[in-house]
Image 1 (cartoon, helix red, strand yellow):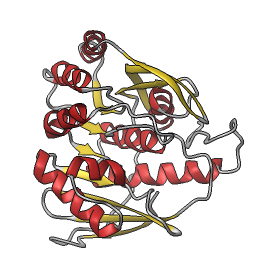
Image 2: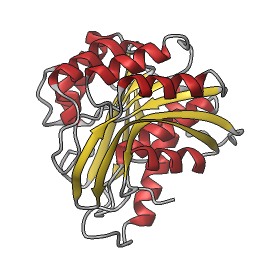
Image 3: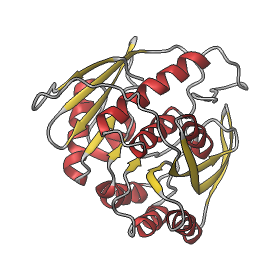
Image 4: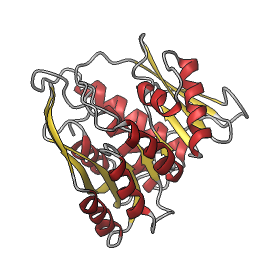
Length: 287
């Protein structure tokens, strides 16, 4: 992911220098709406570990059940939309949910179920990790589902966190270099009305990664970090989005939540880079 070096206002009005949050987080509840990863590296499992590590209580709504390990996805099945909506409603009507994140949403029906269930709770911050498919090549979200995600869920979101391929799919623009990532991020804001997009730079080549936080007021904050050479990168997007949601739940503003989450993920990747987990890509954050 990106670095401790942060630049602000690269395009648009100047902004104060980004500062990571150091305040303790009271025990708050965060809802993750995502798929179950039987290998434990990503999805609900990675989200729950991250939320708890940052001081939150993890409530869950499972969207799909996957059979996977460090080598890839062997099979998966979507949870019936009615049951998905019931899980969300059951949690939000009882617990004091302070933030929500979504991950794998397996189709337009799942997106609509989430929208219906969240309608009574418009003030809860929502972080959308727009999972389209797995790194190993399994596609979870159809073209129709992607369109519904873009046009239905992203306008409700506080932040969307696409990687380069996801940003390209959401914007309709090519993303093969940093300037194109910025253009795609701006296009997503314009198409969806979402107030902020974090375009993650992990797919870029070179020794550095750069993530771009682009907000509707025209500001851009760039987070740069040295790339970590590791096979243990499964679930990076899950960990990052769950960490951002947790810090928002703790009361951080968006830029502080993003900076703290990026630093958390980078520490996890560095500490876990030499661990051996199966025959493929191990978890980005093992706890």
